Image 1 (cartoon, helix red, strand yellow):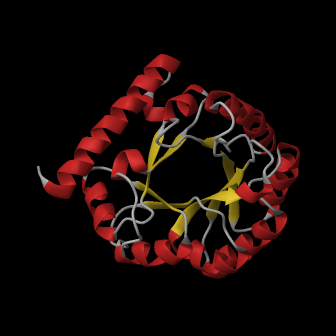
Image 2 (image 1 turned 90 degrees about the vertical axis):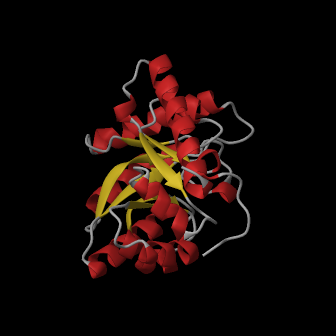
Image 3 (image 1 turned 180 degrees about the vertical axis):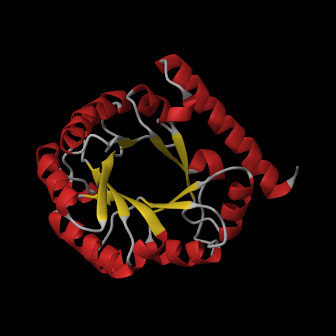
Length: 232
């Protein structure tokens, strides 16, 4: 195996080994953890190769890049995750290809997503993005607002309350930050017990996320290498 396929295969093996080691350290089964390949700025050909290597979950941050990429890979058996901050005017496009939206953080977005999902005759799983440092520029709801958002999601036709998501702030220890997320996860499960997804952890902090109970890891750089300009 050589070229780009070989590079991705080697990276994937290393990432899976890290996940297995983290699970062993935390006393968890690696089968409990889903690897989401974050393919932003990478071409659709990388998505095809990852699919051939066994990846079934793909994450994207921007609709302008994700929509054509998903269309180019529509014959593959993939689950598309939208993980970036989402504007309400992009909801109609996002619900056409994404099965899971990780970045729900305000009532207006819940209504826009629900409206778009119903029009598209789709059901979209949604995670409430929780801010772990309270910085409004980074997106995410305050922990105090999570129960109300969960109730709103639960009652919005076309959407399914699936769990929580967070990005560890650079200024805070990742382990401590992800532990804070567990309170919001519990608040969501109190409203819908099946909403057990915890999307946390990226290339640099996946071990801390696994230790804190993450069920989904969003891995980009460690899997696909450093990012350059967008390649379509």
